[in-house]
Structures are given as structure tokens and as C-alpha cells.
Length: 424
Image 1 (cartoon, rainbow, N blue to C red):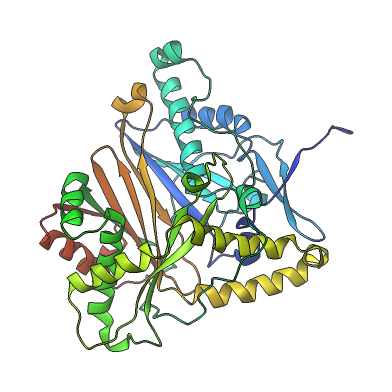
Image 2 (image 1 turned 120 degrees about the vertical axis):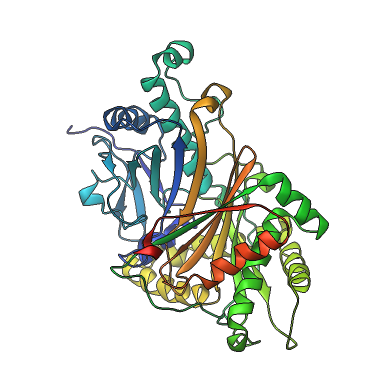
């Protein structure tokens, strides 16, 4: 309507890079899925999306291009259309084909998929939206739930859109980036720009027991298993000049008492630089533990994002036209991206409201590919099960196979599931 005020919002510090580097081959889209214990009704799922989208400010947005920065604007269009999944996951989200929204919802049999352009939010924000979507869907498909619970958002769902980077940064900080090139995994691509998915399901208590015996957290143990597998499969090509380096996103909310639904994370790296001819798995576990422990503390995490925000805050940087900023940011991203072999992210244990538990079987998550990183992993937990998911553009699965073989040799029961591309 003419004269109507349209709300707008800045992108957070991390989000600024995603529109710059996004394209068909690097979509910056991640997926979080919920598997129900019943078949999905498309019409009810669409109704749920229509109801929930306007209620979540962080998703009811479209991306605009300004003179100096990208920015978000409130999206007044109808919610994105739900479709049955018929292609590979995490494809680029074209706003022009998606009612200007930066997320999509698809389904397949009993699974609801939420795919999000990373500029909107990180995994925590994605989980909040997916849970509300699933809750609404279940209330529509089970009227007794709706009668009991109504249609309000859950009390646990934050609508906070604070830029916690800007709120918490310190002006004086030193750069903390890794620019040395890492060992990169290469291979024969899956045909037709394929997207391979391998889920490994494990019992959390078994994982805790094994990890504790090695003096590790579950996260450290699973990252160490990847480093070990990569080292075993490629030891001739790994050196101090081409180290194995795993980018590990760290959720900053617990460290800075934040409930923002914008991005609020930084990357640290688990690094393995060979200094002798042979290593055992025990040694790599210890190296992984020491590498991450030295970085994951509030002071270091604060320093990492403070350097980024300080640069953004400079008046001169603000006044540089967007086209020039984009070129600089893209070059900087390329340098840092090639400094990591892969990314492994743990989105944590997903908990749902008790009334909905009987209807929900499992959650999954995974990442799209990025420059130099055509194999990535995610860790997702629900109740007593953890799923360690590998996504890859390569036909060869020797690294993934060796990861799960090592975990099984440690006495952990592993159930494997794939999306079928490796058998075609």
C-alpha cells in the first residue's frame, strides 16, 4: 500500500559475506529436517507455513541491495510454496522464484525439510523456526493438540533480533585468521552435480562412554575420527604445508548470554600438522583435544568476532560502495576458505515440547558445499540418538567409511543410511 511503512534491518556481521559469495555452486544454504512418525499432508504443511511465517520476524524477510550494504526488508508476500522434494538438497534459493523469501520448505514421505540461506540465521535460528513449523503442522493434523495447546508460539521460541556481534565486541582486537592453505579433499564428482548424503546413527550413551575414556568430548571424538580417516586415506599428501584443518563453528550465545535469532557464531579450527611419519588414533585424539581446547574460551572467541566487527564499524569502510566491498570480501573469503579441509558443525541436542514428542522420530541437519570443501559433516542429536551426517560431491566414500569403521571398532553401534546416489 502507498505510504505504508516497511520495516528494514541490517545484516549481522557474519551474514554480510553470504550474499557476496552465493551462487549455484556455493549456495550457502543449510538444511534441518524433522522426521515424523506419520506421512506428511502437503496441504496441512502449506497451511502451517502460511501461519508460522508472519509470526517469525527473522524469516519474514527479503534481501535488498543498497549502495553500501545489503539489507533486509519485511516481506509482505504470501509464504513460500511447499513442494514435495524432487531434486538434490541445498540448492540455491532464488528469491524471484520463492516469493522473495530466503528459506524453502519441502517434504518427502514422513520428513519435513527446512532449507535456509545462511544470511538469515545460523543453525540455532533454523531450529527454532522448524520446531514452530512442526508444532503448527501437528496441531493442524491432530485437532486434539490444537484444542489443548492453541496456536501461540512456544514460550521457548525467541523473537529477539539483536545483533549480538555489535553488542559484545571490543574495539581493540588482533586479527585471528588462518591463511595457510590446508589439505583439500578432491575426487571424481557425482554425476549431474549430485549431492551425496550418509547418516551414521549412534547411541549417545555409548558415545559418551568411549569419548570419556579417551578424555574427549563427543564433539572432539567425532572430529578426531574424521582427521584420522583423512590422514589414513591421504597420508602421502599431508604435510606441514598442507595440514588437515577442520573448521568448527562455535555457538556464541552461551558465552555472551544472548538469545538472538540472527547469526551469532565464530569458527575455530582443529588442526593436525604431521611432524613424524606415523600417528595412532590415540595421538590424533589428543592433538584434536588440545587444538580445540586452546581456542574455545570466551576471550579468544571474543577476539575473533571483535576483529571483524571493528573493521565493519570504521566509517571509511561504511562509505565504500558495495561493488568494491564485494570484491574485497570475496578475495578475503577465498583465502580463509582454502585454509580448511572441511567444516564439521554440531547443532546440539534438539529438544521439543513434551506434548509433541510422541509424533516426532528424529532430526537431521547438513551443510551445502563451499569453496574447496566438497565434503562436510554435521552432528545432530535427539533424545538418545546422535546422527553424524556427511555430505559430499565426490563419488569416493573411503573417508566416510573409515570414520564409521573406527567408531564401530571402538565398540559403538553404528547404523548407516544414505540418500542412494552412491548406488546408481
